[in-house]
Amino acid sequence: MCGCGGRHASRCHHFPERGWIQFLFLRLLYERPSHGYQLMEELQRRGFVRPGRLESGSVYTILRRMENRGLLVSTWDENLSGPDRRVYRVTEAGAQALKAGIEALMARKALMDDLIAFYHRHFGGEPKP
Image 1 (spheres, rainbow, N blue to C red):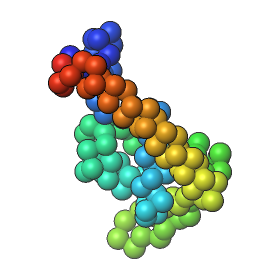
Image 2: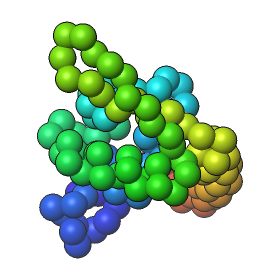
Image 3: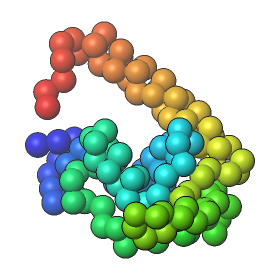
Image 4: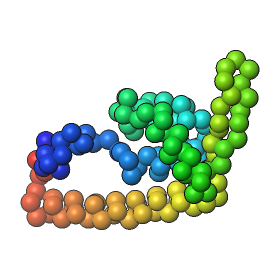
């Protein structure tokens, strides 16, 4: 059992989900502009999402919303051996959102590290899973 206490076991699987997907898209696209299918493959390859968890329709909906919010920009990549593909790139606003998100994660990590150190000082050993 995980830290959720089993209240929502069907959703609890230690993979980042909805709230993280846009953040992970920004991270991957900051490294390399890509099309939606490449993003899905890369998230699965890195173990960021479970295989089959993301549907292509959802991915493209999220990407369009991010583009509408000014976080991404897309262009059509002509492909001679197949269909043309929309390639997404992070905008300056997207890079700033990514930076702010990472800074927030670092602050949260510092809090978690402090709580873990407290646990070790006062309760000793490793916490039970």
